[in-house]
Image (cartoon, rainbow, N blue to C red):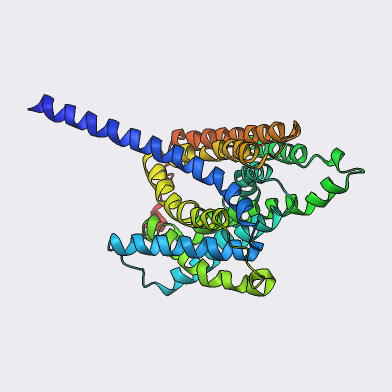
Length: 335
């Protein structure tokens, strides 16, 4: 009986591992394809309309999941206030920046820029989490990542090229979007995590708050005429239901099973998917400096993560310091 029980346990563990791996690969595929979906959506919609469609599809999906699984919405008003900030910085603002950027930036290049999110997080860490200072290894990783961004932007190509110079604001907007992602991740860690609310509920709160907040984009092209076609509608539906709804469920499963360090490696695969889809579906061309710059950024992320792991290992292995014994009291003090 014991053998049978252990065998069943191993089979269940193997099944969970395979399921998590499938979720991880599906997540990389969907998040990498999100930049293609945005590009296709822009064929008939303004950037603001892409954002509004995306978050409303995502909100309806996550609200349905909350209803089907019978999860309760939190009643903590302070938590809802913090989630408004997250909805803006993790949802509406970066979505709008990426959608606006892809009017001039290829979808593959936008997906590569998305990989700079961990670098932005490290840059903002000393500002938002003042108790945490970057180690030398982490600082070196940031420097390597910045060099990768410089290679990505290819400033030497901007001289005398009107097309490339015209894409520079879009590239800056991509960096602005990843800066928002970095800020919101740290904001979540400082003000939201640790309140006893599960991740799926937090993601549903964020996207459901982002949906009405996205309507602020209506005066900025949100009321422009819409070019309705099957590719446009299907792209926005996929972007919302998959990229902004279901993907959160997959991500939090991977996060719970593998931990934050391994889960973050999805950032490395998503640009590969984005670049390949951009070439195959949209016929985009890839310049040599784009994958090279992306690899340099990833090298910086890996270096910074190793520095973080070394720092944690040293902290855990350091012996605890016991309080020193007070000096012996004199007879006069004792009396």
